[in-house]
Length: 135
Image 1: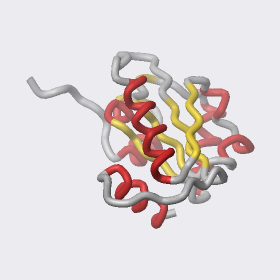
Image 2: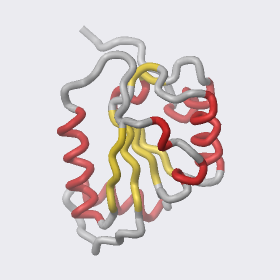
Image 3: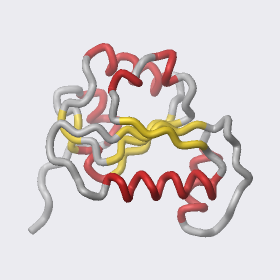
Image 4: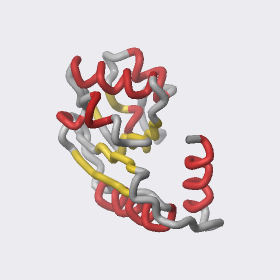
């Protein structure tokens, strides 16, 4: 997993290219229950471009029902792309926590830290919660 994430970082920096591995699946989740960034479509396209260059398949959704243990098991990583607010119910949170605890990958992009304020596990995963933008 670490090797694959390092490869993705190198691809993002334009330093390498790898053959596409359709078995390597990444879920991009961009549901918002608060502020919605206009950049979500551009971010999704950037991740799709990274997938094409970096050897992984991207599935995008704003449907929180994708957060089941069975479904998440098919993904190497889940990207929270500018998510905001309370986007997962208790059952979905439990499935995602189990996924992470079993070694699943997580990437939080920008407003991902503006998500799930009432779920301490997510706050620790994200590393911080959004407070405000600087002036």
